[in-house]
Image (cartoon, rainbow, N blue to C red; front, top):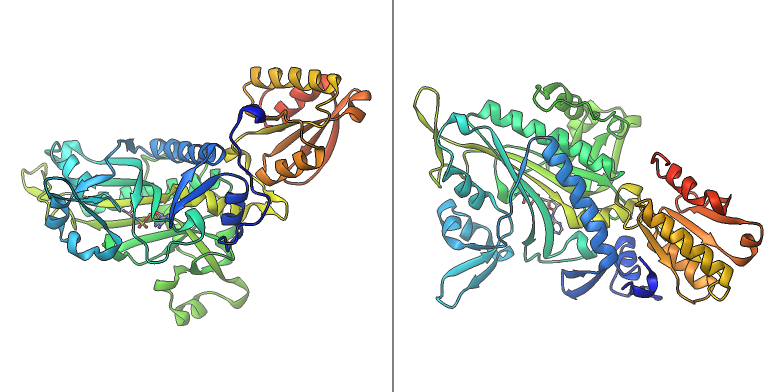
Length: 446
Ligand code: 5CA
């Protein structure tokens, strides 16, 4: 993408309304723009990141056997009246009336709808287990929307729902999602700690919050230090096997969200040096609630013995739009964002530092064509602005690799590659630049 044809509205000044670094950087780097309290438009650069996160979430969901659907944002109040949540949800739910004065709502979550969809077709134990997910906008009329996309009113969530014949297999489905969450966040460069949590308006008696550590986090975390170092289930993970040992390994060391924390138990179970008390950002939350929704909605299936039983379910959420902010909280410096490669909007920022020099223009054009041919996502700063402006903008938007072409180095036949993360600079002969970038990106060079 050429910057002269792109839409990247970066801000020079720090926006006064942004109180935490991720919010500030998201506005400054032109990722989002606020439309009204807690509601954001995603600009091109931010939208690319959102899509990358979505793709990782989708990939890991599918690997764990979950199937993608898409439910609407607007729901009828009927099902919610049957489950009892229409009243219970209170002011956080955005209620709407259509022209026929029928009650609708903008979905804050989808337990009722998905239960109704699934049970309209599932007849017996043969149709189970199944896990359906979607990635869809939600609306919650939060009392205090704040920190940008971190606590929005409209936000993008991956929500998945499992259906099983009995509680034991339901818990197996829960464990499958638990393990897939560990892998999902790890792929984004995040260490998310699963902690026993309360279930709130979703319900049930088994629940874990997945949180990453950040000073600006809204929740308090109490856990054993070992959880920061624990090894992840690898690519050879078999989701058909019983994942109990992995879940037990991860849930054995003390880890509780604030609402489940008991200081006496923490002190008796965890030695002082092993205690980690920190602020956290909740990026995911899993629940097992059995028949809480299937019973009132009469969502039943027949057992092998011919008995009719309510479906056993859990729900599994990931804050897709919140993750953009959470990742920036984890990866930034004074100059701007430092995207992990897996979710960077572009892998390479190609900067022409001599836009008025024909040899620089020619070299950059050739490199840009080569990078495109190699399938490397490149943002090409082909503007005629001065080098200082260009370089600080590149730092701000945080692409993992910068490739700089300037008149002085070009005389020596080299360009410069700079790693955003380390700030390390390497001069590389112009003819080898693309190959070197390929290697740095961990791709097999041609
Ligand atoms: N139905 C269940 C699971 S599918 C559910 O709604 N769970 S939740 O309420 O915990 O939300 C799931 C995730 O969405 C949270 O872990 C959080 O990462 C994200 N989330 C929740 N509220 C907001 C919000 N106001 N702004 C941004 N992200 C949010």
